[in-house]
Image (tube, rainbow, N blue to C red; front, side):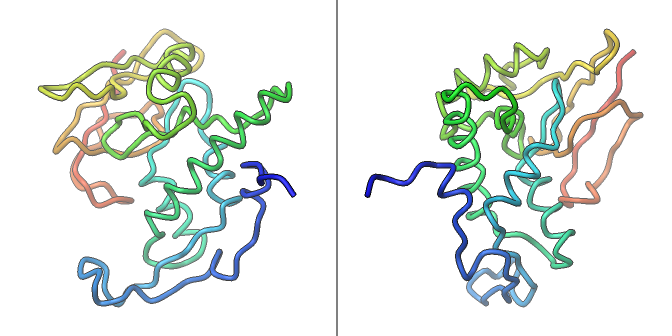
Length: 195
């Protein structure tokens, strides 16, 4: 029997997937709270929600999964692993000629940086995002590429992401200033809509 494809791994069930567990005391930050161990297919489904020209952060993915499961948080380790698995499965599908695949390139880290473990690395993800009108660049002394602006569908306006503490979240959509602690991740960040 040959090596399992990413698509097969994505569909594979495990007894721990989809279960809520109590966070152990060793994870002091979240000790005593309920944490979801997500199913790979659920992470894939959330990644498919980001529309062309928009991005979704891993934090937003985790928070949506936790909210759906009615728990306090979602495991960041397994979510990251399953996001990479979904990306690899999508690339396998593209190699087979499928056109409707999970848009994995629209998933970014919580600070807007691109994910080097995705297929083709940062360069491939950057090209796919640029093709959709997402502006990338570096901020400050960091040499890591991150999302700077996102073209808004249907018009010429762009949404500029202003980093506070270098963290932010959201599927970016046209909106007025959003500031203060983020209701989903509890982090500070601002998103401004420029006309």
